Image 1 (cartoon, helix red, strand yellow):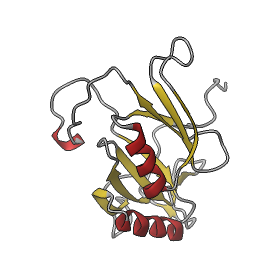
Image 2 (spheres, rainbow, N blue to C red):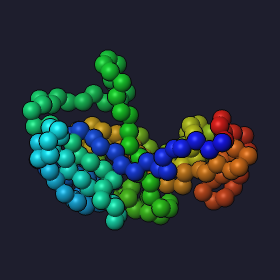
Image 3 (cartoon, helix red, strand yellow):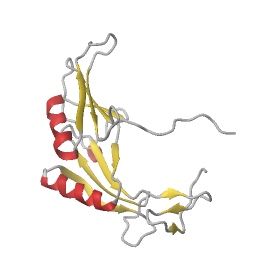
Length: 180
């Protein structure tokens, strides 16, 4: 029996302390375009500023949320965050292929984005892998508010028998999927 479920994840909304700074960073470092901005209470029941940004032709893939009445403080880095409520760890953005990912890696380096992990190959199967999972190449950076962002390419797919398949079409023996 097929149970109803979403078709895909479409966007992420993150809270930012300075909307203008974040808009400029997402434009400059990752190539986002501004779709539209809205003031707090522009619509009844929405007490925050909303800024919609996109990479392609959909209305938005990221929403920058700012509460003009909030006093913001520096967010601890994920590896140093030992106290408090559960937090959002990272958002991930996929490149179409390795060449595009490498070009983006050059761009983020030239823009001075803070790299906090990588570049790495998430793999416990491939010899140059880091021992983790997903069978994809990735780099992790921080935005101006310390939100962790993963930029990746070549994520494995899952074959009908649960075996992971690399972006090159290679069945990765020793991998298995818990739920088909």
